[in-house]
Length: 149
Image (cartoon, rainbow, N blue to C red; front, side, top):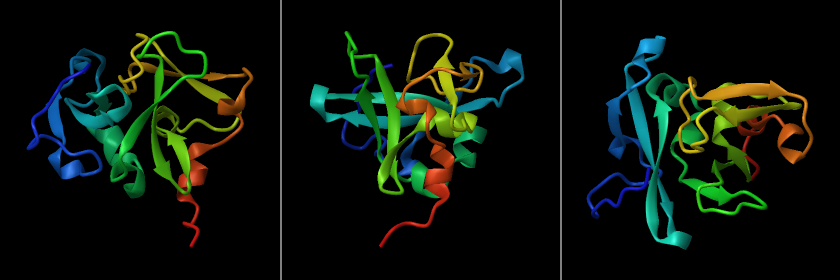
């Protein structure tokens, strides 16, 4: 979902300015509202919005909610939508879908519909096994550590 917003729209890193919308997955028994988190993709000159359920957003650690979320293009991506949504916390970039699903080391998160900006729990699946650096860390444990001074 790519939308351009004038200067008085939602501001990345300021949750009080984020928009809310009805959740079209209500039939599956999920919360009735989603939060549209703005992501300023300066490199490509666009504003993106990540969809996340209100209750999932509320459960995120405060320093992740108030951080500016970014999109990071995946290593061998062939198009601009093969990205992962991340936030700077605890001195490193943590992956938001891993926080939403509380993925432990050795687990990874898959998007069912292929839209990496759709972070609703009804669109995310937790898988085990696999290889690669994304399966070797526990992002929530990173965020919950005391900040380094």
